[in-house]
Length: 300
Picture (cartoon, rainbow, N blue to C red):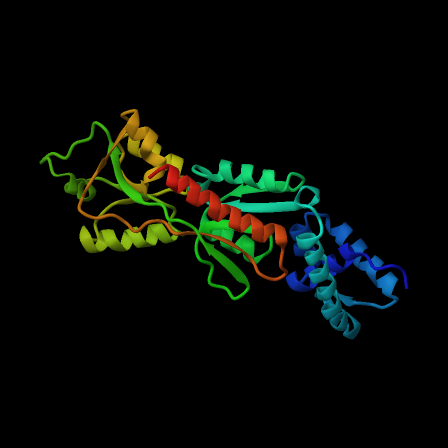
């Protein structure tokens, strides 16, 4: 038997966990032919077939099923070496981050800086998207750490609760309610908010229907920047993260107003797959928590 290769075993496990070569290739950030070549090399090393290949895809052979437990032991040992033996500045791997826009526009730069300082040789890839998409991509193993509106209620996911983002009502600075009652602005102007498939949209819509009525107009957008621009242009009002509106209020483009109630703070988590364990991803989650806390302290 030829010497076993840990990357071959890791690739084997990804194919098993994700159910195919294509998803394994996406998860490992390599090509499908490279995945197939690693599996073939592993089979040659062991002198056994690990998968039956047919038109429906790959199915584990009995030997393949037996290998899973041993491959997981190799994976666990490799992770222990990474965590306990290899110096942080010598770890070379890729870390795929998925980040919601609220975080991307607030403390993401500080977080990436902390990550780079802790793991200077780790290659960081960042995707900014809405939380529903980030959740699906995390479960599909297309990203390693998701900072999203959470928690993700799946047994396979570990969640680190992050400090929330307080909300505020915004309107264009020169907009006034005809009767001088700011509370009437919500009833008389469109309410601009998050994308339809998000938790903040659903919660705000429910609150508006209860407090204002079903005829309230709601405009949704997947871009917080666009929401602020629409409010600044006088096209409506919005309840958006307070931390992102400070600058616009300071320069006189927007003003806050008080209709007597606010949506709940946005609750984010740093979420990642608990199996297989990853020292780098776990440390990244803790760094996200520390960065979010520091950022909150600076803005009190």
